[in-house]
Amino acid sequence: MDWVYTGLGLVILLLAGDALVKGAVNLALRLGIPALIVGLTIVAFGTSAPELLISIRAVLDGAPGIALGNVVGSNTANILLVLGIPALIAPILTSQCDTRKTYLGMLAASVLFIVICFLGPITWIHGLVLLAGLALLLWDQARDARAHRAQGEAAVDEAEDLEGADPAMPGWKVGVWLVLGLIGLPLGANLLVEGAVNIARDFGISETAIGLTLVAVGTSLPELATTVVAAMRRHAEVALGNVIGSNMFNLLGIMGVTGLIRPVPVEAQFLTTDLWVMLGASLLLIPFVLMGRNLTRLAGAGLLALYAGYLAIVLG
Image: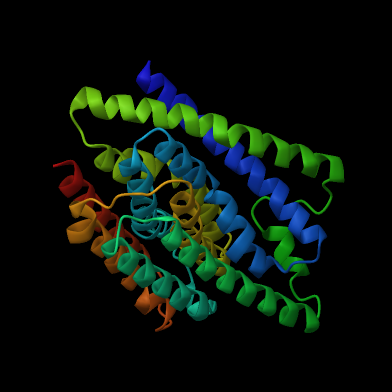
């Protein structure tokens, strides 16, 4: 039954996350927010909603290893897996978009989070620092949105191709999607955490390893779906924006809120291995974001090979 609970929880999380993204994207576009900003914020944060609910549920259930492993593992998976698979399907034309500013913000968030982990456990004070960092990034995004709007309505065509966007969607349907997402996410998170914890105990696997692998990959599936569609439609800015924005929200928003709820201890494994793998994976994007190179199929295969090696080490 634990596998059933885990699988059912994951399915509910994915469906609820998709519903929340659809509702949030269409609500944001109705409010006149540009498509690029939606990709960097609404889509990225919406697809991170499963991680948020999982982490909160895990610390409340006394399984902090799953909470921290979920965030760190998801960030690693977002780069190596979520960008690797779409690149194999269709090369991501990263040279045609400019995400340098947000990428540097992601690196800064990663460094800040690593420093806080070494000062651990992550307490409410650290949570406030992380949330302050998120507020600063959101303020910067809002400023960019205002500047974009002042330049005209160039994002109208982009909005039509944005994942989950439907210009003809009536207001009541937007509300239904939002409600379904908000109800389904906590339900799915509860089932997934309960099943994952029991599986870890039955097989003698640490909660941290479960969080870094099973839970992290499962909760990264919304990002994977969004990025695959964006890559196939040649929208590199949405593909990269989704991953970068999601990683920033994972570190600053999810762990910020989690730290406010209950202290999160940091195991030695994170300090010696997993945090550095996460940072190393982030640095691998330098050629594609800062040097104007496209994310080709060969590069995608390399990312996937690195992720397979990391999983082997964690589970070994």
